[in-house]
Amino acid sequence: MSDPTPRTVRLFGPQAELAGRREIQVTVSPGRTTAADVLRQLGEAQPALAASLPGSRLAVDHEYADPDAPLRGDEELALIGLVGGG
Image 1 (cartoon, rainbow, N blue to C red):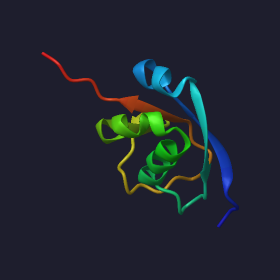
Image 2: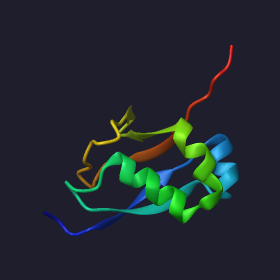
Image 3: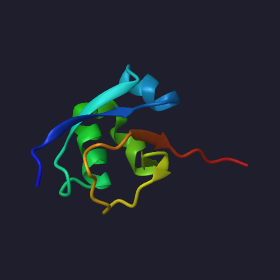
Image 4: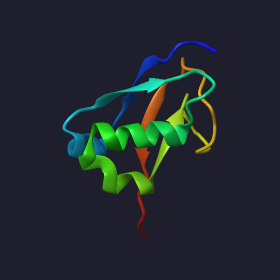
């Protein structure tokens, strides 16, 4: 296994406004860190995001990741807030 590596998670729209930034750094341990772990790290790094995270998904290389999916450590990561409405 590789050493933990810093990765950037991109934020958009209301979540970027809540966080006051468009990117947040997280730590990924290749093969061990999951998408759910990244969401947890985002909430710890930016408590203002915590309430929005249950309605959000992590996109990994432009596709929604399963919460238990392990990361390789070289992916493009983005936080996607799910929007409801009619």
